[in-house]
Length: 263
Image (cartoon, rainbow, N blue to C red; front, side, top):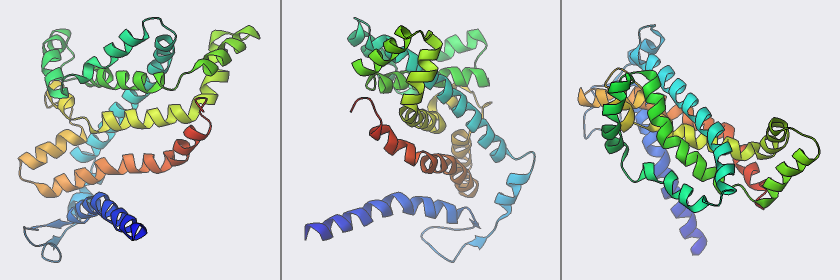
């Protein structure tokens, strides 16, 4: 009885997760598809997907822009966050520093963006790619620090000190000892930081002031315009990279547990 209940529960969970993705993908190939009709009443149309190949396509430019912003933000957050986490782990003020890392999450991204907007306007960063990256870094970087602080332990610190004792420099201790051992965990953190930056809407929309049109911003624009078909195509493009990255990162996620020095 319990086994049957678990199987039903799994089917229900998979359906709840997968069905919206399948529905959005199918919906992107139709126009004039009105509620409450579900299947077979819309007009099949692939023109929206064909327009992705157009050099002036907003969806294609939004996809590339979102990829650039998310990759840069994740790379900077993981690189700096990993180094910062070791400093915090070995500091006597560890608890106070960890408390400070939680401060960006006390407020919602929209409220945080409103507080930062004045400073970004004065600095000339409002409505720029660099400004959006900096704003996203301010919420993704603390996450990477909190993630890596839980990874460090005395064995990992001693491993680094042993490399220094044997004649290695600081750089070689990091890149030839710590980083190779920590690759699975770094990969896992990079994936999660990428996801946070990829789906962020509030900061990008307010600080980008409509000039930085990432995919989440474009989806919101299409919904405001009552254009669900373009919104469906944009949603497919927004979902595809994280799913692909998740599949590529799946092996690393299991290895991060297998080879973690925390064990």
